[in-house]
Structure formats: C-alpha cells, structure tokens
Length: 60
Image (tube, rainbow, N blue to C red; front, side, top):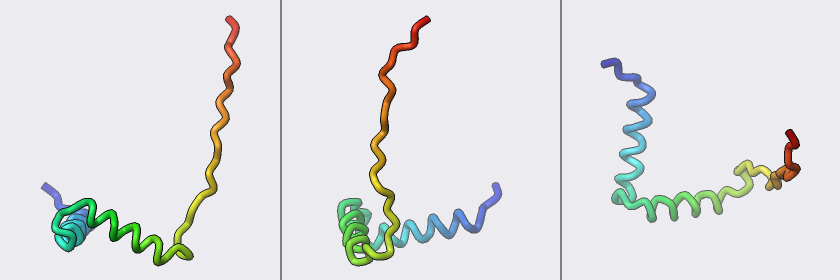
C-alpha cells in the first residue's frame, strides 16, 4: 500500500498535538479557543448571512 508522506506528516502532527493534551478533547478545545482569543486580529470571519426561504407554493 502506498504511503503518502503528507498524510503521514499530518497524522504524526495530530498524534503529537493530542498527546500534549492527554488525549482530552476538552483540554484541546480550551487551548484552541484561548489561541483564537489571543490572535483575533489574525482570524478571518464572515458576516452572518441570513438565509431567506421562499415559502410560495408551486401550483401544478
């Protein structure tokens, strides 16, 4: 089976990252939120776009 080096690197980095947080998703999420709050000026956000749904019935 072919091993893609990029996929292998992503998996390795993911493993190291989760190991830092003892495989606790709550700790990892808290860390990510803290980093986002520290770097708000570097985040790209989209304005909320309200979806309009046409409620007209189609007549046959």
